[in-house]
Structures are given as C-alpha cells and as structure tokens.
Figure 1 (cartoon, rainbow, N blue to C red):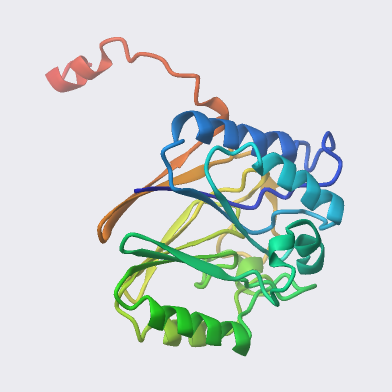
Figure 2 (figure 1 turned 90 degrees about the vertical axis):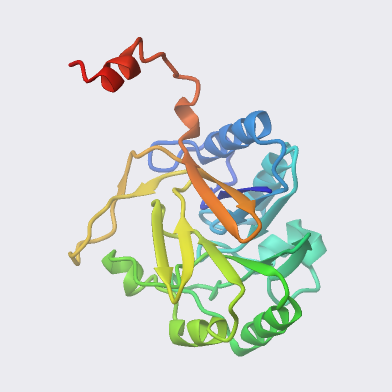
Length: 272
C-alpha cells in the first residue's frame, strides 16, 4: 500500500502572489502533478497542516481548487497558521465538527488524523476533548496497525524556536496515551519545514519538507528561525503489513535525469 505525505503548502488567497520569493500555489500544483503522474496508485494524500499562510476564506478556496485536481483522495488537517472557522466555511463537510479530526481504515491499517491547532498560537496542543477522542479511536483500532498524522512535532527537534514557542505542548500526556498501545507503527507530522526522522518509545516518526519554503538547519543556537532555498519534497510511504519504508522526493527537478555513462562499471571494477 502506498500513501503520499506532503505538508505546509502555505497557500495564499492571491493565486499569483509570492511568499519569500516563491509561489506556493504553483509549487503545490507541481507536487500534485508529480503525484498524479508517478503515484496515482496511492491510496490517499495526507496534507499535515499550514494549508494557508495568512488564513482567509479566499486562501482556502484557492487551496480547495488546487487539490481538486488530485486523482486520489486528499485528507487535510490544520496547523498553527490555519483558521478552523474559515476552513469549515469552505470545507463544509466539517461544519458541525468542533475539531478537524477523523479516522478510517484500509484493510488492517488504521489512519488517525489529529487537530493540534491552538488558535492564534504558534505552539500546538490536544485539549481534553481531543485526547478523549484519540483514546476512543486507539481502543477501537486495537487490532489494526495504527498510523497517526498531525501538524506539530511531538518530540524535541533541536531547533530552538520549534522547541520553545512553536512546540507541541503536553507531550508527556501524548506519549503516556500512546504508551498504552503496542500497535502504533508511525507518526507523520509537518511544521518543521525539514526532513527529519526520529523514534521515541519504539514509535518511528518523520517530517518531510514544505511544498513552499524551508527552514534553515540552525541547531544548538537561540537564533531566530530562518528560511532557505532548499527544494520542496513530498514523502512516499510504502506499507507492507507492519513494515514500511519512506522516500522523500524533490519533485521540482524530477525530470533532470541523466545516465552515469559507465560510472557504475568503474566503481564495481575498482577503477578511478
């Protein structure tokens, strides 16, 4: 089974407007074009938050118009840049929901989508109502391989701003809740605008780069978070029973492929 994970598109209402010198609308369209071309056999696409940059109803209309070109289902959750009310005005199927949380199963796999948005704050959380829902779902899916999707990172990542003002609060409760279950296979998250792989308590996790702008790797410093020109990616998750693998694909230059012109033969033979 194949799943596509992309994150943090930061769509703005003006289709042709730029953000940090790039066009987020154009980049998300290119990502979906690549996915349609190469991964139309995927079961779904998960987009893990910051769907909009400066969240407006117009931005969500733009976002909805873009994802309607996908050949496979798209499942969206919210990040700290998003606005729950404006999102529900455009995605009316959620109009009666307090939070944008949902789940479904495919064969023996269960997929749980969490809403970590704490409106108006960079940091994220799960309130008691959201934790109650999560616990109910984990009980319901005790016989499944469980995969979680969320925006905020549930671990320390080594980037000062993301581990302080933009962190996921009450992490201890989150891990205490998950620790009661042995069938949680993986957590996919966004927010960091970087590729990162991690493991806690035997549960693996990953983040892929934003389809828009990236965050510079500045660890062990209290310097302000900075953006850079690293290329956007989406993640391809291949699930085989309880096993899986993940590729991070830089889709902007995917057609720039060339032959190694005998280089492999030189390597095998030991020639320089």
